[in-house]
Each structure stands twice: as structure tokens, then as C-alpha cells.
Length: 491
Image (cartoon, rainbow, N blue to C red; front, side, top):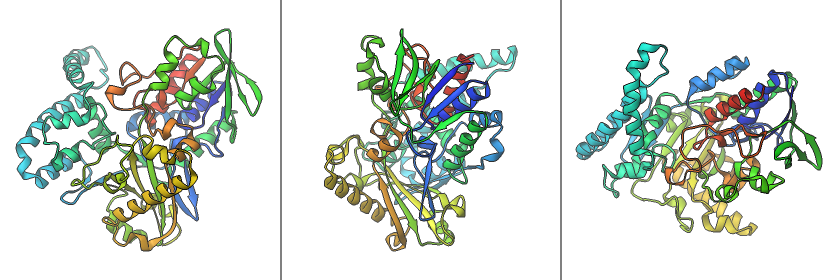
């Protein structure tokens, strides 16, 4: 059996630890934070529970199958998550894709012809995406193969087109519909996954009733029960190499020999900071990693409300509300826009609407989030603590005021308040710029040659990637599948 060191106890690290410990390997899992979970962690303040990062996931078949395989599925209360899109002229709670379609036509009758053209193309993607499944026998392969070829042509057509560019083909850039529809999915993701995003976001979106942290805790406990060693508050300082291969890690000045090192940590830091010998990397690799774009960071306001759950339910309707001021266009890539938070999208999320135990009796928890420009306002003050605090407070105050359009008189209910910037997320998760979902989803900025394969091997022998960074668009499903691939490689 092998000695294995895993860096990071997020979903990828916990999954890898469980799979490899179950095979009998000697596994040590290093986590810099004091609790496991990474971006699938959460925290409590004054009795209110909040998510630290990831709110939900898709590809439930992948996730549930993995949890059943580990024998922990029944310990995790998975629940469906539904979302509501809200603007001045549009209000739609999404339970199925037809709800979205009908609401758009009802709200914008003058755009019928443009919507017809838009949906004609989206429907092609939806039909092909749903038709493609894993063929079970020869005859099914004959039927599915032409669909696969048709799908490939459609995929290639839109592979390098952003969702913004796709939407521009059908709607005027100054129209409300353009500003609304380009928000579907991650900012400027590939147009080739518009249908996949719709299906995932509406038909297959899930979360954990008791919070993501409870999921991480179940996996951590299972890992330890399998004989794995979980070292919390233990930041890895170096990945040691010898003869071109990873041979261990250094943590708190102590060397931990290993036959394999698995990184479930930030990809950039893995190679640019932790690797002890950069000369082992192929020519140009370090530069490519350094320049590669990561996914957007978020600004989050955490609020504990002296507001009964029933009253919050009346305002929110569903636990996840995506609110847009479509009259005020904003640029997610303008880092110098002082008034960004006056115009940006804001997402409201309440964990206590899933489980009243996520807040004190008779009260509610609320998160207000927005993706923000990279290095906004000189990266939040360029290290000046006073400027940082002022920017953070101003942003929080603005989002609370704007969220009052959804929850009237919101400010009067607040009895606990905190906020996190991308710098906060980077400090706790080690993800470069607080990246929320690994690499950039923008196809013009992809790190990998394509955005759809999972790659766990690296230029360094016995150094593997076992997290969402193994895939261009990250996410929990990748953080489960990447460890599975790693476990297959380590006999």
C-alpha cells in the first residue's frame, strides 16, 4: 500500500481521502483551515448558519452515486433548490424550463419574434443534450451515434462563443431581455453549454438542508473511520520532489514522505508556490499557469435577521432569489467602477428557509451576494486596511439597501452583520483571487485546450490534481469525479 499526502480538505480532498483510505492506503489529509470543507464549508455566528462558498450543485446522478458508493448517502439530507428571477417587470420562480419560457414571452410580448429565434436554437441544444445518454447496447449506439455527430457540430459552432455573444445574436444590447438572458449561468460561459446550464439550474439543482458544512463533516468523519489522518490547521508549505517525482510535503517545517501527492488546493499555488523545483516544469508551463484566468470572485453580506421564517418566506418565496436592475447595465470587468454595487446583479439566499435550525428560533439567516470585477478598486485598497474597510462597508450598505426592494425595511431586522470580499475567500480557501469555480468559464480564456475533459495528471510524476481544478469549469461534480480518476490510477 502507498503513502499518500492530500493538500486541501475541500470536496475533492475529502473524496480522494475516502476513496484511497478505503483501498487500504495510508492517507494524510492536510487542511490549512480549522474545519474541513473548503468552498463546501459553512459557519455559524450567534446561532445563524451561513454558507462559506458553494450554495448548490448539479449532476445529481454523479454526486448521489458517489455518496452511495461511500455508504454515506443516507447521512446527508439532500434537497432540491429552486430559484426565482426577479426584475422590475419580471418575476419567475423556476420549477421547470417551460416556466422560464412562458414567463419570458408573457413579460416581453413585443420581443416575440426575437424570442422565437432564440428558443429555436436553444431547443436544438436541449433536444440533443437530453437525447444523448450512455448507449447500453449495439442497437442503441446505432441510434445515438448520428445524434452525437449532430451534437458535435452544434457544440463546435458555439464552443468558443460566450453566452453574451450568443444572446447578442437575438436581442438588442440595450434591451432588458439581453441583459437578463446573458446572466444565465456563469458570466460569459461558453454558449455551447446554454442548454446544459438550463437543465442543471432548473431541473437538477440541489443543496443540503442542514448546510454544506454538514456534508463535509460526514465525509471527514467517514475518512477518519477508514483510518485516514485529518490534519486541520495544517497548511502545506512545500511539495517535495526527487528525481522528477513528488515524494512528500512539508507542513509546519516537518517533512511528510509520500509515494503520491494529491493537490486539492489552488492549481496556481500548487505549481507556482508549493512545488520545490520549478525546473521540472515544461518550458512555458509556469508562465501559462500564472497568466491563466480564474473564475469570478464574490462579495457576500451575511445577515442575521430578527424576522420570523414565515415572513421571510412571504418576501422571498423561494430560498434563492436572483435580483436584477435591468435598467442599469453594469460591466463585470470594469475594476475601476466606483458605483459597481449600485448596478450589479444581487443574489439573495437563505439557509433557514431550508431548515429553521439554521437560525435561532423565530429568526432568519440571509446572504446577499454579487460576482465582482477582478481586483476591484485597486484590489480593495491595495493593502490599505482603512480603504479596504471603507470599501467593504460601502458595498455592504449598498447591497442591503438594494435588497430592500425584495425584503421591505430589511435594515430594521438586522441583528448580526458581516461581509466577505474575494480577498476573504482567498484567505480561507487559498483560491487565487477568491475564485469560486476553478478556472474562468469564458471560452476565450480557457486554460485547458477544451472545457470538457477532466485531467488529473501533471508534468510532475506522482503529483495529481484531485479537485475541481482538474476541469475548466470546476464545480462539485468535478470535485467528485477527479478523485475517482486519481483512485483508479493509484493501485
